Image (cartoon, rainbow, N blue to C red; front, top):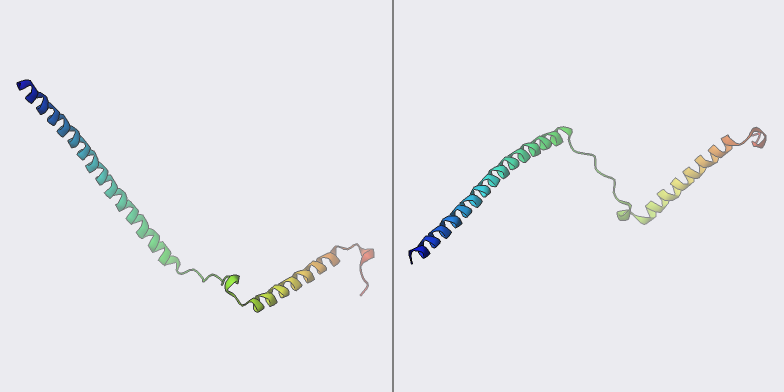
Length: 103
């Protein structure tokens, strides 16, 4: 009968040792996490300082989706006209001498 008590005592001791080792591992991981959080905080503060030093970025232009369709169409047609004019000038410059206009 006493050997049952001995088995139960051994089981409890083994369980306590296992739980103690797991608790020790969790404690070590918690300390590592604290150190990593501290390093990340230092990095973040350095980045915030750098961002403040660089200042605000210029505002991005408004997306065309939110603009006035008539104004955007006029702008598009003006751009197309300017690009056609530039292309025409480049083509004229590339023509051979005999194909150029005399004016």
